[in-house]
Length: 319
Ligand code: XMP
Image (tube, rainbow, N blue to C red; front, top):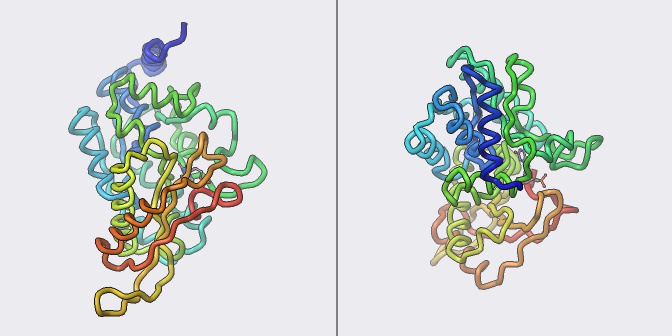
C-alpha cells in the first residue's frame, strides 16, 4: 500500500537512476517545496547536489540567514548564497506598477541564478519543486489560463535557456503531501509548516516604490505580528499571515506629541489551496494587542488596520 516512506524510497531511487553520476543544481528559496527537494536530493545523491540561494533582499526578518544556517551548516549541503539585494533594489527603483514589479524581479532572479549556476559549472540537471497542481494547470494561483491576474514568479523560463534537464521529484504531490514528505525526511517542523511566501517577496506587500527603509520597516512590523500569532498558538490554523506597508502617512498622538507616520495593514487568511480564501476572524483582544505592540515597538508606524477582504474579490497578496 501507499505510504510516504515508500514514496520517499521510490523517489530517491528514481533520482539516482535519472541523474547517474551527473551534477544537479537546485534553487533554494527557504520555502517548503524547494527545501524538501533539496533534502531529498541530498539524501539521494549527496554532494552531486549544489544549491543556489538567490537572496533578493525581499525576504522576512532573518530569513536569509536561516536558510544558510539550516542547509549549509546543519545539512552540510553545498550552498552558494548570492546576496543580490542591492541589484534588486536598483532594478526596482522607481517601479510602482505591480506587474512591472513582478516581471522585473522574475527576470533578474533568472539572470542571477543563471550567473551563479555558470560559476559552479557543468551541471546537467536542474531540480525544481514543481507540484501536481502546477503540472495540471498552466497558470497556477491565478484566474485560469486565459486571464493572467498576476504573473507568477518562479524559474519557469530557466531550464530551456540553460539547456538543462529537469529533476522534479514532487510532480505527483499536493502541498499537504509535500509537508508529509518533509516530515518523513526529518525536516524541522517550523519549516515544514511554514506559510507560503511569494517569489517576489515583500515587494508585493509594499504598494508603490520600494526602498531599503520601507523594507526594514515592514520586516519589523511583520516580525511582531507573526510573533503574536505564534504566541497565541494560531500559526498552524492560518494559511498565510503577513503585514503590508501602506503608502500613506496619517496623524497620531504619542505622549505629548503629534506624529505623522506610516500606516500598515495586517492580513491573515484561511484557505486550502490559495485559490479562494477567507479572512481569519481574530478576536478583537488579539488585534488590539498586536496593534499596541507594533505602534510601541516599530518607530515610523502610528496606525494599524486589519484587512477583512476575502478572495475573491480580493487576492491574498496586495499586488
Ligand atoms: P494571490 O495573491 O494571487 O496569491 O491570491 C495566491 C497564493 O500565491 C502566492 N503567490 C505567489 N507565490 N510566486 C509564488 O511563488 C508568486 O509570484 C506569487 N504570487 C502570489 C500567495 O502568497 C498566495 O499564497
